[in-house]
Image (cartoon, rainbow, N blue to C red; front, side, top):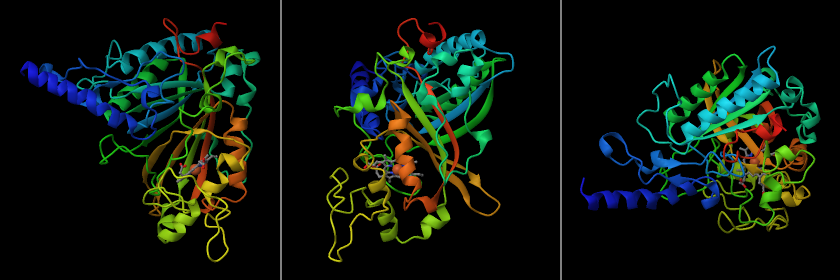
Length: 412
Ligand SMILES: C=CC1=C(C)c2cc3[nH]c(cc4nc(cc5[nH]c(cc1n2)c(C)c5CCC(=O)O)C(CCC(=O)O)=C4C)c(C)c3C=C
Ligand SMILES: [Fe+2]
């Protein structure tokens, strides 16, 4: 390849990252993704943009919260093995951090790498670690368990499977390439060794970067534009809504966040029978472009007080977008960063599909809980969804230079 060609392909590489990076969450530079200008595939050819994008492992916040939604995701919860305690957990977090840092940089996992990701670049891989309430009992760290990890209340519409809920430890893996994500999942599982066993595991997906003509907010499996009203890093209250500030009663959580994870099945056969106009009234937004039923475009503010010629509210009083709005919940908000899932078609012919709902917030008692309480009392979407599994995890801040994730908890 001539120098000129190399330059052109590098420019192309760098120029298209913004587009890929803006899909899903429009977080721009805050997402912290960088392109490997020097990344090369076989025989010195440059990797395509999707493959070459790397997310830094170290920083104020763990990776996997602010980055754009990735095309592929794996969620996995572990329980510490019988007899394993703080010492084993500490060694495990060291091993997991080391392997996550290597993989996120596009390097092999280490000795005995499976080779599954050999030809690919980092592909926006993120590996994010969290601790469940039971972790603190198992490691003798009850005094450092944050009150924010108190169990979520039971909701009347819950149909939770305990075997697919909870867990001492939680790992979220996301990447724009399915093999890169699977490779990371296997590496994380192997590094657990005898210290921890998988409790449950879920697989998810989102749209691939470049699939749409221009970057846009994600769609879910009901076909709705989902994520429009997520808090934005440019908003003044973004940090305080999503991340734990320094100076709290659990200093090790500074820069961290709480992840509420819900496996929400969609009753798609019922949903798909609803005429478009009724589907739109369930949410309060247009299906085609996510615009509020009160008019404008996707980002136009929704007018919750507007009535139509019949004197009725244009956005019905049980519409999902009305009930979940911060204005209706004392300001309660969360950053939703989900994956869709599809685990096959049951013997009754219904798809086992829906949303791996992941909500990030500084305090679930001021985020997920009040909103879900309200939704539980009369959301028009409720007849079409079923909450089947649940988890709540404390996700500490990102590791500084030379640190492993959770060091400030385990070694304080
Ligand atoms: C408790 C929190 C929430 C659950 C559970 C939840 C499930 C859920 N939501 C959709 C689809 C949409 N949700 C939308 C907006 C929205 N949803 C929540 C919270 C929960 N959703 C919030 C806080 C908001 C934002 C409200 C606001 O700020 O105005 C939308 C509209 C577009 C958008 O803003 O994202 C859609 C569509 C599904 C399918 C679902 C369960 C499967
Ligand atoms: Fe929602």
